[in-house]
Length: 194
Image (cartoon, rainbow, N blue to C red; front, top):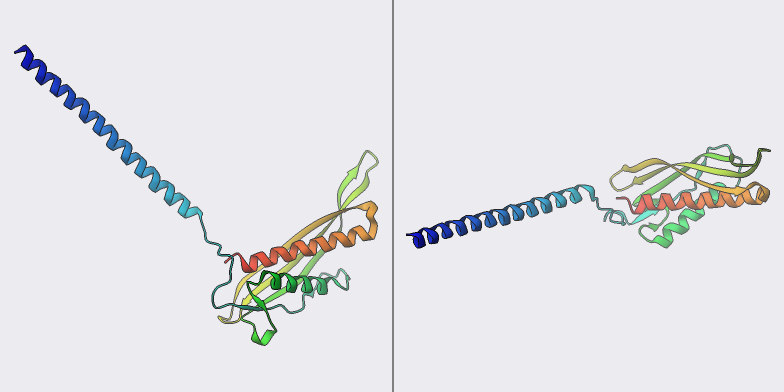
């Protein structure tokens, strides 16, 4: 009887241990599946597709002369920004740059603010100005001519700086860098943020 009892008790013990191991494996499997599903849902909620190309119905863009309502008095700034935008859109080749009547879309750019005397750095106790900043802001409207609606309308801002000892040449270079930065931001918003 002792042998039978031991065998039966041993079998029950093994069955009980086996059941506990099976329950742990099942619980762990469920935990892994739940974690994987939660992770996939979280990543799916965070990811948004930015295709980097225009919608299929837009293949061309008109870029009219940039307007300047900033009152800065800089004669070539609007032409410079227009030329840089046209060049960058052509190099990117996501949207073909064409004349207005044939364009699927239109990029309207208006320079609204030019700040060129921003004090950025002062040296020592003498409070001598050493670095100045240039800020350029533009209101941009990108229009879909096919569906007759604005794709986006927003204000872009770009900054650059120069050492005060560089004088007018430094300010001109800083403004050119701000224009270049602004044109990059406009290009990326137009072709890559769909």
